[in-house]
Image 1 (tube, helix red, strand yellow):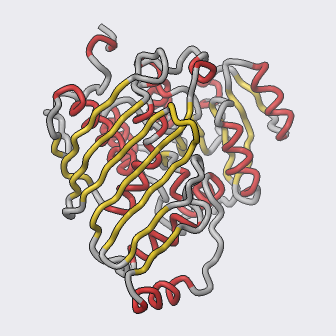
Image 2 (image 1 turned 135 degrees about the vertical axis):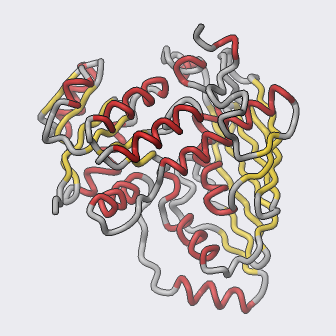
Length: 361
Protein backbone atom coordinates (compact mmCIF):
# COMPACT_ATOMS: atom_id res chain seq x y z
CA UNK A 1 0.00 0.00 0.00
CA UNK A 2 1.23 3.46 -0.91
CA UNK A 3 2.42 5.41 2.13
CA UNK A 4 3.56 8.76 0.71
CA UNK A 5 1.31 10.50 -1.81
CA UNK A 6 2.61 12.99 -4.38
CA UNK A 7 0.75 16.28 -4.41
CA UNK A 8 0.37 19.07 -6.98
CA UNK A 9 -0.95 22.36 -5.61
CA UNK A 10 -2.90 24.50 -8.06
CA UNK A 11 -2.79 28.14 -7.00
CA UNK A 12 -0.14 29.58 -4.68
CA UNK A 13 -2.26 31.94 -2.58
CA UNK A 14 -3.79 29.81 0.15
CA UNK A 15 -1.85 26.97 -1.43
CA UNK A 16 1.17 28.11 0.59
CA UNK A 17 -0.85 27.68 3.79
CA UNK A 18 -1.66 24.13 2.71
CA UNK A 19 2.07 23.46 2.57
CA UNK A 20 2.95 25.21 5.84
CA UNK A 21 0.07 23.85 7.92
CA UNK A 22 -0.88 20.69 6.08
CA UNK A 23 1.89 19.00 4.15
CA UNK A 24 5.06 20.05 5.99
CA UNK A 25 3.82 18.66 9.34
CA UNK A 26 2.76 15.49 7.51
CA UNK A 27 5.99 14.96 5.56
CA UNK A 28 5.79 11.23 6.25
CA UNK A 29 2.48 11.13 4.38
CA UNK A 30 2.73 13.63 1.51
CA UNK A 31 5.33 15.00 -0.87
CA UNK A 32 4.56 18.26 -2.70
CA UNK A 33 6.00 17.50 -6.11
CA UNK A 34 4.53 20.31 -8.22
CA UNK A 35 3.14 23.82 -8.03
CA UNK A 36 0.96 25.37 -10.71
CA UNK A 37 0.19 29.08 -10.91
CA UNK A 38 -0.34 31.60 -13.69
CA UNK A 39 2.13 33.93 -11.98
CA UNK A 40 5.68 32.48 -11.94
CA UNK A 41 6.88 35.45 -9.86
CA UNK A 42 4.61 34.30 -7.05
CA UNK A 43 5.08 30.58 -7.62
CA UNK A 44 8.86 30.31 -7.90
CA UNK A 45 9.78 31.79 -4.49
CA UNK A 46 7.31 29.41 -2.81
CA UNK A 47 8.69 26.47 -4.77
CA UNK A 48 12.23 27.49 -3.78
CA UNK A 49 11.22 27.96 -0.13
CA UNK A 50 9.83 24.45 0.18
CA UNK A 51 12.01 22.65 -2.35
CA UNK A 52 9.22 21.86 -4.79
CA UNK A 53 10.91 20.61 -7.98
CA UNK A 54 8.20 21.17 -10.59
CA UNK A 55 6.69 24.52 -11.53
CA UNK A 56 3.93 24.74 -14.14
CA UNK A 57 1.65 27.44 -15.50
CA UNK A 58 -0.66 25.01 -17.34
CA UNK A 59 -3.17 22.91 -15.39
CA UNK A 60 -3.38 20.28 -18.12
CA UNK A 61 0.36 19.70 -17.86
CA UNK A 62 -0.07 18.77 -14.20
CA UNK A 63 -3.01 16.46 -14.94
CA UNK A 64 -0.79 14.61 -17.41
CA UNK A 65 1.81 13.79 -14.73
CA UNK A 66 1.39 10.08 -14.03
CA UNK A 67 3.19 10.23 -10.68
CA UNK A 68 0.92 12.91 -9.22
CA UNK A 69 -1.60 11.28 -6.88
CA UNK A 70 -3.42 14.33 -5.48
CA UNK A 71 -4.53 17.56 -7.12
CA UNK A 72 -4.99 20.25 -4.46
CA UNK A 73 -7.10 23.07 -5.94
CA UNK A 74 -6.50 26.49 -4.35
CA UNK A 75 -7.59 28.71 -7.24
CA UNK A 76 -10.25 31.46 -7.29
CA UNK A 77 -13.77 30.03 -6.83
CA UNK A 78 -14.94 30.26 -10.46
CA UNK A 79 -12.23 27.76 -11.48
CA UNK A 80 -13.08 25.03 -8.97
CA UNK A 81 -15.87 23.32 -10.91
CA UNK A 82 -13.99 22.64 -14.18
CA UNK A 83 -10.78 21.76 -12.34
CA UNK A 84 -12.43 19.33 -9.91
CA UNK A 85 -14.21 17.55 -12.76
CA UNK A 86 -11.04 17.38 -14.87
CA UNK A 87 -8.98 16.02 -11.97
CA UNK A 88 -11.55 13.35 -11.10
CA UNK A 89 -11.80 12.34 -14.75
CA UNK A 90 -8.01 12.04 -14.83
CA UNK A 91 -8.26 9.53 -11.98
CA UNK A 92 -6.63 11.80 -9.40
CA UNK A 93 -7.51 12.25 -5.76
CA UNK A 94 -8.75 15.80 -5.25
CA UNK A 95 -8.63 18.35 -2.46
CA UNK A 96 -10.51 21.58 -3.13
CA UNK A 97 -10.82 24.83 -1.24
CA UNK A 98 -14.24 26.29 -0.52
CA UNK A 99 -16.59 26.79 -2.20
CA UNK A 100 -16.32 23.41 -3.88
CA UNK A 101 -18.35 24.67 -6.86
CA UNK A 102 -20.80 27.44 -7.80
CA UNK A 103 -24.25 25.82 -7.64
CA UNK A 104 -26.22 22.83 -6.44
CA UNK A 105 -26.38 21.58 -10.03
CA UNK A 106 -22.59 21.64 -10.21
CA UNK A 107 -22.10 19.92 -6.85
CA UNK A 108 -24.53 17.17 -7.88
CA UNK A 109 -22.56 16.71 -11.10
CA UNK A 110 -19.32 16.49 -9.12
CA UNK A 111 -20.85 13.92 -6.74
CA UNK A 112 -21.94 11.82 -9.72
CA UNK A 113 -18.46 12.05 -11.26
CA UNK A 114 -16.85 11.18 -7.94
CA UNK A 115 -18.80 7.91 -7.85
CA UNK A 116 -17.30 6.94 -11.22
CA UNK A 117 -13.74 8.10 -10.53
CA UNK A 118 -11.04 6.03 -8.87
CA UNK A 119 -10.00 9.19 -7.06
CA UNK A 120 -11.36 10.43 -3.70
CA UNK A 121 -12.59 14.00 -3.27
CA UNK A 122 -12.15 16.00 -0.07
CA UNK A 123 -13.51 19.56 0.20
CA UNK A 124 -11.66 21.84 2.62
CA UNK A 125 -13.36 22.74 5.90
CA UNK A 126 -10.27 23.16 8.06
CA UNK A 127 -12.08 24.89 10.95
CA UNK A 128 -13.51 21.47 11.96
CA UNK A 129 -10.21 20.38 13.48
CA UNK A 130 -8.61 21.20 16.80
CA UNK A 131 -9.06 20.49 20.50
CA UNK A 132 -11.96 22.89 21.05
CA UNK A 133 -14.27 21.78 18.27
CA UNK A 134 -13.42 18.09 18.66
CA UNK A 135 -14.08 18.03 22.41
CA UNK A 136 -17.47 19.66 21.84
CA UNK A 137 -18.23 17.15 19.07
CA UNK A 138 -17.22 14.24 21.31
CA UNK A 139 -19.50 15.41 24.13
CA UNK A 140 -22.44 15.82 21.74
CA UNK A 141 -21.86 12.49 19.98
CA UNK A 142 -21.66 10.70 23.32
CA UNK A 143 -25.17 11.90 24.13
CA UNK A 144 -24.02 13.89 27.14
CA UNK A 145 -25.14 17.29 25.81
CA UNK A 146 -28.70 16.09 25.27
CA UNK A 147 -31.29 17.88 23.17
CA UNK A 148 -30.10 20.96 21.22
CA UNK A 149 -32.03 24.12 22.07
CA UNK A 150 -30.61 27.18 20.31
CA UNK A 151 -27.35 28.34 18.76
CA UNK A 152 -25.81 31.54 17.49
CA UNK A 153 -22.96 32.12 15.06
CA UNK A 154 -21.21 35.48 14.76
CA UNK A 155 -18.65 36.09 12.02
CA UNK A 156 -17.43 39.62 12.71
CA UNK A 157 -14.50 40.20 10.39
CA UNK A 158 -12.85 43.09 8.57
CA UNK A 159 -12.28 43.45 4.83
CA UNK A 160 -11.66 46.76 3.07
CA UNK A 161 -10.54 48.23 -0.25
CA UNK A 162 -7.10 46.58 -0.12
CA UNK A 163 -8.68 43.13 0.06
CA UNK A 164 -11.02 43.90 -2.83
CA UNK A 165 -8.23 45.38 -4.96
CA UNK A 166 -7.59 41.78 -6.11
CA UNK A 167 -9.46 41.76 -9.44
CA UNK A 168 -11.51 38.57 -8.95
CA UNK A 169 -12.76 39.45 -5.47
CA UNK A 170 -16.08 41.12 -4.81
CA UNK A 171 -17.60 40.03 -8.14
CA UNK A 172 -20.34 37.47 -8.66
CA UNK A 173 -18.80 35.97 -11.77
CA UNK A 174 -15.48 35.18 -10.10
CA UNK A 175 -15.91 35.04 -6.31
CA UNK A 176 -19.47 33.63 -6.52
CA UNK A 177 -20.59 35.46 -3.38
CA UNK A 178 -19.54 37.61 -0.47
CA UNK A 179 -19.28 37.23 3.30
CA UNK A 180 -21.91 34.47 3.33
CA UNK A 181 -20.24 32.25 0.76
CA UNK A 182 -16.58 33.18 1.12
CA UNK A 183 -16.06 33.92 4.81
CA UNK A 184 -18.90 32.73 7.06
CA UNK A 185 -19.27 29.39 5.24
CA UNK A 186 -16.75 27.80 7.65
CA UNK A 187 -18.58 28.84 10.80
CA UNK A 188 -21.96 27.90 9.37
CA UNK A 189 -20.52 24.47 8.57
CA UNK A 190 -19.44 24.13 12.21
CA UNK A 191 -22.96 24.98 13.34
CA UNK A 192 -24.61 22.26 11.27
CA UNK A 193 -21.76 19.85 12.09
CA UNK A 194 -22.59 20.19 15.79
CA UNK A 195 -26.29 21.11 15.88
CA UNK A 196 -27.82 19.24 12.94
CA UNK A 197 -29.38 19.81 9.54
CA UNK A 198 -31.38 22.90 8.69
CA UNK A 199 -35.10 22.56 7.91
CA UNK A 200 -36.08 26.17 7.26
CA UNK A 201 -34.21 29.46 6.85
CA UNK A 202 -35.06 33.15 6.57
CA UNK A 203 -32.11 35.28 5.54
CA UNK A 204 -31.21 38.85 4.66
CA UNK A 205 -28.12 40.14 2.90
CA UNK A 206 -26.81 43.66 2.37
CA UNK A 207 -23.79 45.44 0.92
CA UNK A 208 -22.92 48.20 3.39
CA UNK A 209 -19.17 48.13 4.02
CA UNK A 210 -17.51 48.03 0.60
CA UNK A 211 -18.25 49.20 -2.94
CA UNK A 212 -18.62 45.68 -4.34
CA UNK A 213 -21.21 43.57 -6.19
CA UNK A 214 -21.56 40.90 -3.51
CA UNK A 215 -22.86 41.14 0.06
CA UNK A 216 -20.75 42.01 3.10
CA UNK A 217 -23.44 41.84 5.83
CA UNK A 218 -25.91 39.01 6.50
CA UNK A 219 -28.35 37.75 9.13
CA UNK A 220 -30.55 34.67 9.27
CA UNK A 221 -33.07 32.88 11.45
CA UNK A 222 -33.08 29.07 11.28
CA UNK A 223 -35.16 26.09 12.30
CA UNK A 224 -33.40 22.73 12.40
CA UNK A 225 -34.73 19.29 11.56
CA UNK A 226 -34.44 18.35 15.23
CA UNK A 227 -36.51 21.36 16.32
CA UNK A 228 -33.65 23.55 17.57
CA UNK A 229 -33.40 27.19 16.52
CA UNK A 230 -30.43 29.22 15.35
CA UNK A 231 -29.29 32.61 14.21
CA UNK A 232 -26.41 33.73 11.99
CA UNK A 233 -24.83 37.18 11.81
CA UNK A 234 -21.84 38.15 9.69
CA UNK A 235 -20.17 41.34 8.55
CA UNK A 236 -16.90 42.46 6.99
CA UNK A 237 -17.08 45.81 8.78
CA UNK A 238 -16.27 44.89 12.37
CA UNK A 239 -13.79 47.04 14.29
CA UNK A 240 -12.54 43.88 16.03
CA UNK A 241 -12.33 40.49 14.33
CA UNK A 242 -13.92 37.60 16.19
CA UNK A 243 -15.65 34.34 15.40
CA UNK A 244 -18.07 33.14 18.08
CA UNK A 245 -20.38 30.15 18.30
CA UNK A 246 -22.58 29.75 21.38
CA UNK A 247 -24.67 26.58 21.46
CA UNK A 248 -27.18 25.78 24.20
CA UNK A 249 -28.08 22.12 24.70
CA UNK A 250 -30.25 20.45 27.31
CA UNK A 251 -27.33 19.60 29.59
CA UNK A 252 -24.44 21.73 28.31
CA UNK A 253 -23.80 25.16 26.84
CA UNK A 254 -20.73 25.56 24.63
CA UNK A 255 -18.98 28.77 23.59
CA UNK A 256 -16.16 28.68 21.08
CA UNK A 257 -12.86 30.42 21.34
CA UNK A 258 -13.11 33.80 19.62
CA UNK A 259 -10.05 33.44 17.38
CA UNK A 260 -11.45 34.60 14.01
CA UNK A 261 -9.64 32.14 11.74
CA UNK A 262 -9.17 29.21 14.09
CA UNK A 263 -12.12 28.96 16.47
CA UNK A 264 -11.75 25.19 16.78
CA UNK A 265 -8.20 25.20 18.12
CA UNK A 266 -8.23 26.21 21.79
CA UNK A 267 -10.52 24.51 24.31
CA UNK A 268 -14.04 25.90 24.30
CA UNK A 269 -15.96 27.13 27.31
CA UNK A 270 -18.02 24.12 28.39
CA UNK A 271 -20.78 24.87 30.90
CA UNK A 272 -22.47 21.73 32.28
CA UNK A 273 -25.91 22.19 33.79
CA UNK A 274 -25.19 20.09 36.88
CA UNK A 275 -22.53 18.06 38.70
CA UNK A 276 -23.61 14.79 37.10
CA UNK A 277 -23.05 16.18 33.60
CA UNK A 278 -19.71 17.66 34.67
CA UNK A 279 -18.54 14.27 35.87
CA UNK A 280 -19.55 12.61 32.61
CA UNK A 281 -17.64 15.24 30.62
CA UNK A 282 -14.55 14.90 32.80
CA UNK A 283 -14.61 11.12 32.37
CA UNK A 284 -15.03 11.39 28.61
CA UNK A 285 -12.18 13.87 28.20
CA UNK A 286 -9.79 12.23 30.64
CA UNK A 287 -6.52 11.49 28.87
CA UNK A 288 -7.49 13.65 25.87
CA UNK A 289 -4.92 13.47 23.10
CA UNK A 290 -4.05 16.80 21.48
CA UNK A 291 -5.59 17.35 18.04
CA UNK A 292 -3.64 19.82 15.85
CA UNK A 293 -5.91 22.36 14.23
CA UNK A 294 -6.88 23.26 10.69
CA UNK A 295 -5.01 21.77 7.72
CA UNK A 296 -2.60 19.64 9.74
CA UNK A 297 -5.31 17.31 11.00
CA UNK A 298 -7.52 17.51 7.93
CA UNK A 299 -4.63 16.40 5.68
CA UNK A 300 -3.55 13.69 8.12
CA UNK A 301 -7.07 12.28 8.17
CA UNK A 302 -7.25 12.46 4.39
CA UNK A 303 -4.18 10.24 4.31
CA UNK A 304 -5.94 7.82 6.67
CA UNK A 305 -8.89 7.73 4.27
CA UNK A 306 -6.63 7.17 1.26
CA UNK A 307 -4.99 4.23 3.00
CA UNK A 308 -8.28 2.70 4.08
CA UNK A 309 -7.83 3.35 7.78
CA UNK A 310 -10.66 5.84 8.29
CA UNK A 311 -13.53 7.54 6.45
CA UNK A 312 -13.08 10.86 4.68
CA UNK A 313 -12.98 13.68 7.25
CA UNK A 314 -14.97 16.00 4.96
CA UNK A 315 -17.13 14.79 2.10
CA UNK A 316 -18.82 16.17 -0.99
CA UNK A 317 -22.11 15.67 0.88
CA UNK A 318 -20.83 18.08 3.56
CA UNK A 319 -20.04 20.57 0.82
CA UNK A 320 -23.51 20.17 -0.68
CA UNK A 321 -25.07 20.89 2.70
CA UNK A 322 -23.03 24.11 2.97
CA UNK A 323 -23.92 25.20 -0.57
CA UNK A 324 -27.59 24.34 -0.01
CA UNK A 325 -27.56 26.74 2.93
CA UNK A 326 -25.96 29.41 0.73
CA UNK A 327 -28.56 28.87 -2.01
CA UNK A 328 -31.48 29.05 0.43
CA UNK A 329 -29.99 32.15 2.06
CA UNK A 330 -29.69 34.09 -1.20
CA UNK A 331 -33.14 32.97 -2.35
CA UNK A 332 -34.76 34.03 0.92
CA UNK A 333 -33.06 37.41 0.81
CA UNK A 334 -34.63 38.04 -2.60
CA UNK A 335 -38.11 36.64 -1.98
CA UNK A 336 -38.34 37.74 1.68
CA UNK A 337 -39.79 34.33 2.48
CA UNK A 338 -38.79 31.29 4.49
CA UNK A 339 -37.02 28.66 2.40
CA UNK A 340 -37.55 25.00 3.26
CA UNK A 341 -34.67 22.56 2.84
CA UNK A 342 -33.56 20.25 1.29
CA UNK A 343 -33.43 21.87 -2.16
CA UNK A 344 -33.86 19.71 -5.25
CA UNK A 345 -33.60 20.14 -8.99
CA UNK A 346 -36.95 21.95 -9.13
CA UNK A 347 -35.74 24.86 -7.02
CA UNK A 348 -35.43 28.12 -9.01
CA UNK A 349 -31.84 28.61 -7.84
CA UNK A 350 -30.70 25.02 -8.31
CA UNK A 351 -28.63 25.99 -11.35
CA UNK A 352 -27.20 29.18 -9.82
CA UNK A 353 -27.55 31.35 -6.73
CA UNK A 354 -25.97 34.27 -8.59
CA UNK A 355 -28.48 37.10 -9.20
CA UNK A 356 -29.86 36.96 -12.77
CA UNK A 357 -28.34 40.31 -13.78
CA UNK A 358 -24.84 38.93 -13.07
CA UNK A 359 -25.28 35.57 -14.76
CA UNK A 360 -23.68 34.98 -18.13
CA UNK A 361 -26.07 35.08 -21.05
